[in-house]
Length: 177
Image 1 (cartoon, one colour):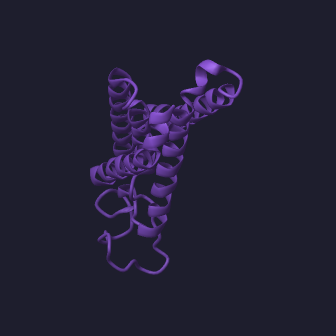
Image 2 (image 1 turned 45 degrees about the vertical axis):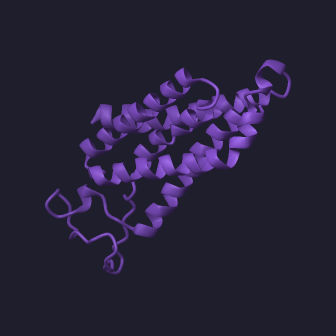
């Protein structure tokens, strides 16, 4: 339980916050340091990508109201399984789909898009990092009984599409920097 709850869950959340804070600090530093100015759009893409992805997944969790496996009969819980688009019983509100924790890891896809047009090596590193962190977070949550694999696969899909959409909107600005 220690590695899943403390290391991956709490530590993982802190890792994503650290990335956002580091990018924000570099963005602020770019106001004074000429060498960082050309990275402003990339830094903004990472910050906004993580924020929008996390916010969208959080919103979808509230809309879908899907329960966690540990809440379901057959997995140690008391609730019956209800299909994604089926009517939920009164008072039975869940908040597990899509997976937010893995989604925060997969939101690092923004790193890939931030570096895509600047450096293939950095972009590849960002992509691998996002996949490793997202999959590690997913495994930790699945091991705890908090999510099914499908919850985390949808999180990856949503994160990719969100970061791709933001990149498409920012592409001209990124090329100008």
